[in-house]
Image (cartoon, rainbow, N blue to C red; front, side, top):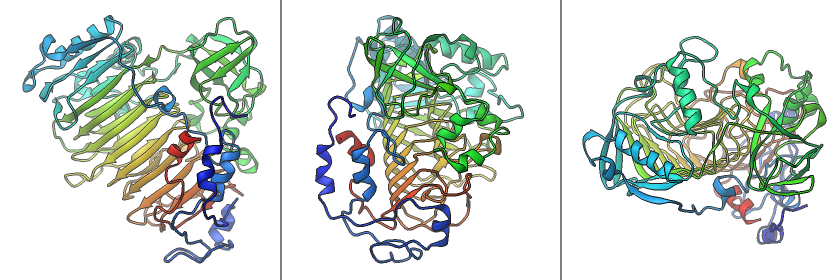
Length: 573
């Protein structure tokens, strides 16, 4: 059943256009053998048995999706990804405060971080507000922290307002080591010189780092004994908008809750995330210690309505709810909501890019335990890592750019981050050659993160980095990429992909295949409208044996697939 206000009639503009018979349900053996029949001629430069695409073709899989948009076997429903369920406009709340009134100076002469942080704290105490930065350069010798709901830091535009950062997170907070020991720096994938994080969580994190202890990062993290059950949940199917609960007395419309699913001894939850069937059932999960540390799976979602024992969410269920996974709605660390950053550039003092996994923490903007937060018209320059989601959900990065001397992770998405949107983004070509021993990833996703979207992007370097940890049901769509990065992830993190990964209308300028055309790697996936690519450099093999149930359509195209952008099309449904 469709959610209220959502109809499939609006897609008829697509399905009435000319269509072709396309390849469907490709097995791994079939793809590798190249013995697949096609309806149209072979694309120039493509392998045998791959169909050429004419302008404006609609893949069969799109018509199928419109009939079952919330439970399609290969394409996830991501039409409500992003802050405010993708509705776009940002409501303004509270007071307008000017950073200059708190002592900030826009000529780079003094450290303006204390003044900006005082203004942000004042906005928080007032119940929300916007802190304005004027044109010019504000030197910051400390990080900028937004820890209260409905507080926005707003510059005069990314071309007009600059924060010039002189120090890194190691200097400011301390060494953020790995929970797995060794000399790896967790600043390689966490923290930002602009850091959106609830105030209590931020204090816990920084105190733990200063004490050389591993801090808990996620919605309940490694202190999961603190969560409390609100109610247990009856069985339900993936794609349902409502569930039946045992006790709704503690639930209210507008509440943010966690749907918590625990794995069982046979790892049937992980198998379900991988699409189920013979391949995942035969996979050996027990030694994937990093992967298994990510369960229980925790999905934050806001309640849309409560009617008796029936609870409706603002998004459909990402997975089945089964009794063997002890499904519960629980409490969580307080989320940061309604906060944002817009209209500025954060430039770090230029230093050489660090050796792999030894980043000092010249990081850009981090969103941690955020829900319904946003970043708009923000550029980060000369950073170790650009923009990051850490246990962040339902948040949006719009019109963002990563540039300068080169970054380790231009974008990272980890620790169970869900339903986020990154749109109109740019990874700019580095301004200096990469030093030996450094690493470039790209748009990263890992750690059972799901239903995240990267849309309308230009990547002049980097790759589609699945960093293992079996992320699932994520979408990259309408992106041009010079595919010269490498993905990461160690063996203990498990598979590269879970089920329902979709790459839709992807233009690869250097023809490098690596993680672009994923029908031979990702189970129950869709590769639609990807330009012709060839295998060279980093070459992967499937994690799961047998038929992957993947789909490949309109391969070898150049903007011929319709709809052009999968996220926009799902929003129109």
